[in-house]
Image (cartoon, rainbow, N blue to C red):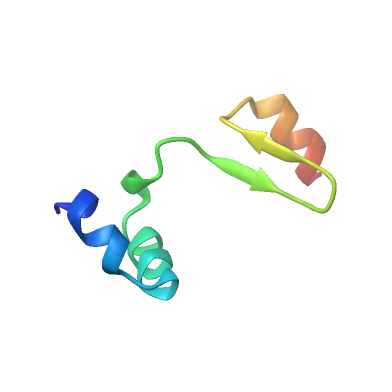
Amino acid sequence: MKLKDRLPSMTEEEQLELLATDGMLVKRPILVNEDMVLVGFKEKDWQDQLL
């Protein structure tokens, strides 16, 4: 996809749309809420934050 070359000229909206159409572009899941950020996936940590 040559994203390295395309990303600098893409709008944020275009970048988000691209991410939404191809989940394989996200190498590491990220969960952000009001007071914390989880990077990577540890099932217990995600359950604690989401449930």
